[in-house]
Structures are given as C-alpha cells and as structure tokens.
Image 1 (cartoon, rainbow, N blue to C red):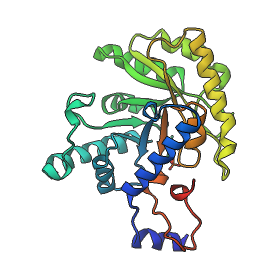
Image 2: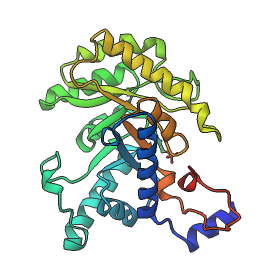
Image 3: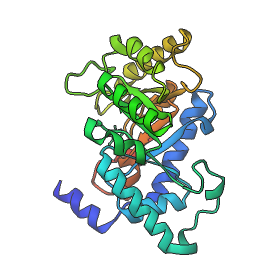
Image 4: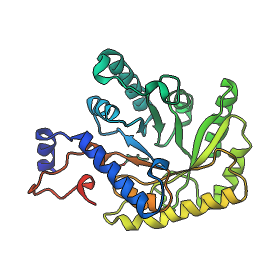
Amino acid sequence: MKHMMQTNITSPADVKANLRHVQSRIAAAAARARRNPADITLVAVTKSGTLEQIGELLQAGCRSFGESRVQQLQSRAADLRSMLEKSGPKLAVPDAAALPGAGVPVQWHMIGHLQTNKASAAVTHSHLIHSVDSLRLIELLGDIGVRRGIQVPILLEINTTDDPNKFGMAPSAAFHMAEEVADVPGLKFMGLMTMARHSKNPADARPAFVRLRELFEDIAARKIGGEYFKHLSMGMSGDFEIAIEEGATIVRVGSALFEPCPAAGDPLPATACRTG
Ligand SMILES: *Cc1c(COP(=O)(O)O)cnc(C)c1O
C-alpha cells in the first residue's frame, strides 16, 4: 500500500494513454460480440481523478463523466465548466456545438445511491440518473419532472447479485417497478443498471450481467419500457469487457482511467489498465 502511494506520487496516471487503452479494449470486446463499438458509451467515473485529468480526457474526446455523489458531481461539473471558460483555445472542444445539450460539451451521469433530499440537485445537474432504486425515488423524481415540465432520464438499478449490502431493487420487483416508471409522466425510462460482485476474476461478473440483460429483454418484450428503453448500464474497470459481451450500452470505468499503470518491470501487480 505504501509502495502504491509512492508510485502514485512519482508517476501520475497518463489518463490519455489509459483512455486509448480502455477504448481499444471496448472495441475488441464489441468485435468479439459482433457489436458496433459506437453503440457503447464510456462513462469516465471521476471519483479518483483530478480536475486536470478530467480536462485531459475531455480534450482526448471523452464527453461522458460519472460521479457517485450529487454534491461531488455538481462541484466537478462547475469546476470543469469554469476551467473550460478560462482555458481558451488550449482546451477548446471543437465539436461542442454539434453535441446534444446546446453548447454544453459534457454530460454528467449520477451513478451512486441517490438520497431523496438530493433528488432535485441530481435532476438539475445530471444527464442521466443510473441509480433509481425505490418507489419513493420514482415518485419524487417524477414529481420534479412534472413540476419542471421535463421528463427526467432514469435507469432502474437492479441488485442482480441479491447482495444485502448493495443498493438496487430485487430482480423480482423489476417488472412491477418498470410498470410504475412507465406510468409516470415526468420520467423518461431509459433502461437498467447493475453492479456485479467484486471479484479478481472478471468472469465471475457474467451471471449478474446475463441476469440484467434477460430482465431487460423481458421488460422490452412485454412493451413496458417504451420508446426510450434501450440502455444497459453495466461493467466497471474489472469487468467491462464481459459486460459488453453481454450487451452493455453504457460502461462506467474509473480506476482503469485514473490509476497509474505500473511501468514495465514494476513489481506492482498489473492494474486493470494494462491487462487484456
Ligand atoms: C466507482 C464506481 C464505478 C467505477 O468503478 P471502477 O472499478 O473504478 O471502474 C462504476 N459504477 C459505480 C456505481 C461506482 O460507484
């Protein structure tokens, strides 16, 4: 651990190189599954990144960022905006105007457990809320949407590993919750999200991803989802390739982008960023 921290100080992560590596792994996994890599959105989870690193990712073409806490998301988004305004041409984003969101070049994703008292801020500052996990939250976000005259884009989080320590709805409740969401005018129901069990072996994640895809297919087959229901948010640094093989349209990757990669000959175990 001590050694790890020293490495961190002496060799900050080359996030652009990490991004290219993650993108090529996404492309390879998509090819294996005969899928178009353009159908897969990489959300860079910035929990462990610095503002400068987020700026570098933006310059390198990354447009989607994720945070697991609303306050952090809000302050990161504001900091990045002011950095962009101050930096001028150096950080200018050439294709900003062509992106959805009227000149806002970046999209922030709220991926962590959402407390009801933060729901309003989450709606204001995020492009998509991945972590809707209760009827209470469904109703609350729906009310906020109606009051603002918008449809709040959401995913339902499903606890596909039946882990009592994890957030998310029981898979057995998914249909009922999907029906509830579909009936709420202030919501745009865009899909499902899950987290797999943490494991050294990426293959251990597969059953959770298969379970989420099957739930998704069942909901779609019963025509509950509606026209926007097309996303499966699943896969993190340790298992995003497996998730892509099982149909992920959004992968949420943090440490593989922001952790320094051990140099050749480094005694540290290879982290997610240089495997594969
Ligand atoms: C932190 C986090 C991630 C990213 O995890 P890494 O293993 O660092 O890639 C993805 N999803 C959620 C919900 C998270 O909280």
